[in-house]
Image (cartoon, rainbow, N blue to C red; front, side, top):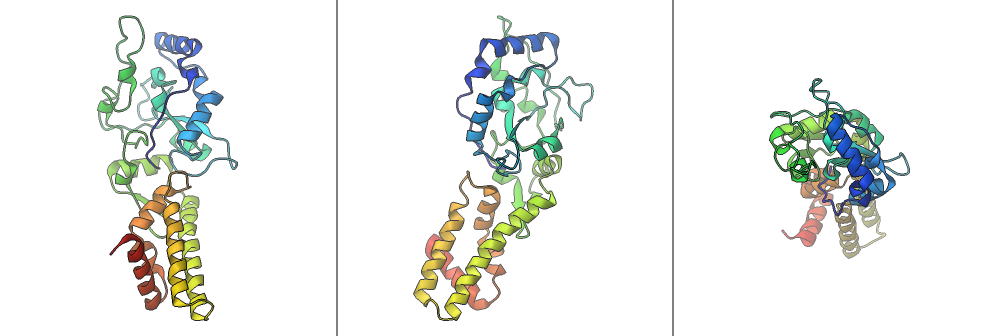
Length: 280
């Protein structure tokens, strides 16, 4: 999960038909409508989330069809069965997150909170919703104190940490709740993340073997390792799959890379290259 920023909302969500649908939902106190999954909405979300699931960071296409998750469930809430769901937010742009089918199914209609459950705010004198009170970082939604991390509102790096074996855990209570609710600790994700480190280390070891066998000299080894390290840096870009994990691994380079190398000479050489690129 990485932090993202939304740009201008798709026009379909401000269309007369969609606004009428929202008005009827407010009157009936229940959600109906499909404007939230219109192709323009999906296309916009895919651009904002770089084609990755907003929760697990897997690149969705072409393996699966991207889905639109409601951060606050639109029809019911599993943690509050007497709550009608956030029907007034069903087409709210800030409540829509791109998700892969696995994470969308895992999260489902879960929305645990630590505060008081919000209900629809009073309408404006003209009978319309007060859109400022439909934003996740404003009252009354903010006052719910959600247990789940919203990638468009918060710095996700403050909530998660990883291990070289690819496992994830929460630094905070809310980070742990997000992992548990969305099942971000699925074994397949651990293996995918671990493979990233394994592949990087395999290439580094190949360069060392080439040096030991006399195929390259010391200067070439250092130069190639710098290129290798820069490739790792590039994999921290937000459009790359599992970039939060790769940023964490780079920040904890000793633990994820240097200490994983088999010999002291390799570890010493890698430390020199790291310091040459990033400074001592």
